[in-house]
Picture 1 (cartoon, chains in turn blue, cyan):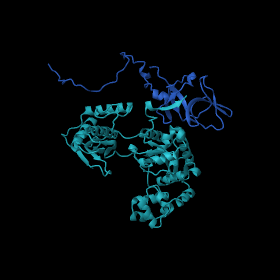
Picture 2 (cartoon, chains in turn orange, purple):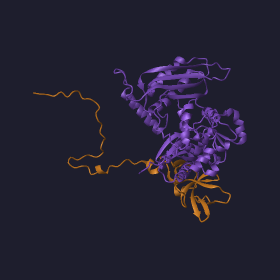
Picture 3 (cartoon, rainbow over the protein chains, first blue to last red):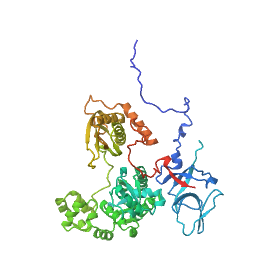
Picture 4 (cartoon, chains in turn yellow, orange):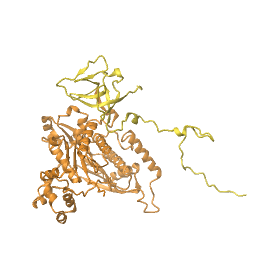
Length: 142
Length: 425
């Protein structure tokens, strides 16, 4: 009779990643070729880019397009603002969130709530666009 | 035959960086002069362009408080979370546009523009893109050497209105004009004493230095000034630097927000400084074998009794474990603390730093247990994700009453969810 000493069982060794699907003997998993990286909201919202900033919305003038008070706004400063963009504008140095409308020579900051009139930019006004809002995020938890 | 193109460097430098950062989220201050104060709101460390005529660098805040109010100048405590984040944004924008970058300081970096067809256009593009994407105005200086790029940047700042913030000294005509019209004291690396020496030799302008004989400068002074002269005349001696080698010492030292007389709050402070120091230690992947802890009273008030003492502790093995380091530091503190004094400052210094693999000098020496390294990795991961101090030693308070005075600090607009910019809607 012969025997082989195996030594004591030890902890450790190489840990293998857990596969969430069963591997049928003989047949390779049809999903194995389709495994992709995890979904990242950082990537979707692009918040790690050097030109992207977050801000908190304060007020109800844009609720017609689903931007409510307390929402998180994702602002991209690299985008060239054009007619129709939702923007953070600096109107006489006050930051405000509105829709930018350009009709010929007229520039209008439009609200998305009938309670608020359009704001036409006048001669003495100082307007610059701080950034373009690309996404807004709201919590439905509480 | 292919000839190697002449190197081209750019120096990109943020204008009044700290003040500009404050203005990004305070557009109402666009035309209001701003100063930024040092830790504990001690003295002026940065001024916006329009505050410079009224305030000197280094002036103590308590002395100029009234004058600031009269002139309508707004003071801020330094908000390094904000400045650090804005700096990272500026630097990554630069990195995305040029072949190679050396980050020189929080608000300056050198870029390699060698081989780019129209470097002036690139300079204007860098400036425009950084301004648009961050709101921070920068100056760009371009030249065939780092010293000329620095000089070009200085000129861009000095003649902002003429130059639009971009100056290219790659052409002989422009370079010679600037060299003739710049005092030698304004040249990068020429200090006050060297200026006096050079002026004594009749070297008064940058042009004089560029034309001086580099060999005799080397013999008379040093290789540094020789290189400066060569660089001014267009021969590149300095290259884009490699990243910094790991530091040989790590220090965390701060004044308390108020005088402390008891041991307990000083222990908290030492534990807090050690937390920060050990984070820096692990960030550069070093281990430390010795710790120095020191405390002192105020040194300038004639009515206060003065005391200062430090002590060095040797650790059982090279470590980066904050638990072991904190225990060593707090035990050491008990040895040097004397009751009856009003303490103003504590310092933690990590010494005898080693890189992994460097410290197996003794076969039988104990090493840091692998488990401790894993705990530290998890600690750094948690704090990296959820913010500094989320997970910390129990001896580190979350809101110490001895903390730094930072009464005029702006929000951490870009790094704290609870302090984001608010936009009216």
